Length: 206
Image (cartoon, rainbow, N blue to C red):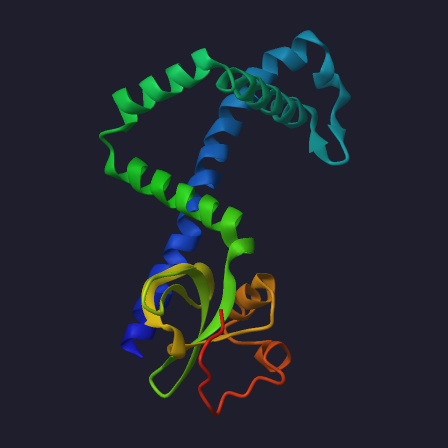
């Protein structure tokens, strides 16, 4: 129970941390955009329009301003000069911050895992007298395989483990179904695992 609570709290924190960071950045950016939108609204006489669908016109102008700035920054970032400036800024100012490196590594890892998830294969891993859902990553030599074992309720948080082939059982479900089971802490297993014989161990054919 102690291990379950610890891993669940850590997994939840890792899941919420990027969202909280993005929300904090967007909130700060929105405040700056609103200050910049006030004189623009006054110059174009938008401030006399009041509200549109209950939203202040200054707020709408600020949102449009943020979208335009983000789009322009994206165009600049796609150029060679933009890439060099971004790399220089990161190395000069952000490279020494452990928090930034941690968030960057986490974002890259999640992005790569999301992009490659369609290539993974859902499996059951034998251990502690039962089975646990895992993602088959790749096949190694001498009948060993690499498996990522997720920690509910975060499908992309867990540990990398190595098993012999006869300790895993391939599942005839999609990665989307497997991740849904992990995210829903086991709910949906009856449907996804219908027909699977969990009482005996079979040598994997993957």
